[in-house]
Length: 251
Image (cartoon, rainbow, N blue to C red; front, side):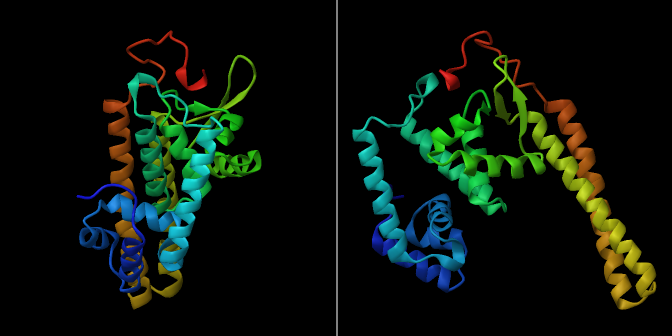
């Protein structure tokens, strides 16, 4: 499978595949590239509806040029703990960001989550996020507010009274429970519709089927989340090695 950056010809093939309605996996197979490469390329350059090969190619050239300028100025990727390859970590962070975007999150919210999840501590201040992502504090603030509303992050204050934004194991449990609550509201609305539209009518039957399906799924989701939390949950604060060592993310 070839590596390296996408060529202009490959980008034209991606655009043609999107125009033909092909799935990312099929486009990737034809290019002999990982599906994640094609997904990331499309999502970074306008999405399925807005992707243009020539614009994507020029945008990549500009990003590469800016990266070289930053390296000259010494603004390279921060050194990574545990002997990690800094470039590989940065590429993975972009891949994870793309996954969050394809699940429905706006780009900046996805970038903040991707940044937090690729730190060992799982917690960063707004200024640290802005510095790492090279965006304005206002952009971070807006993304943080939206992520908090979805219970995908939480905030805490350190000893210096600085606010840090945190991702940990329990947030996924809370997210699953919130999803189940959302389903319950839809179930109630669907069953209210049955009474209004008349039990046994086609419209009411459709709504009743929705309610039954979501009720089954919601119950299973809640039960699975509870079991997973009980069996698998381990606190990120109780690290087995070097628990008392300084946090390399904030060095």
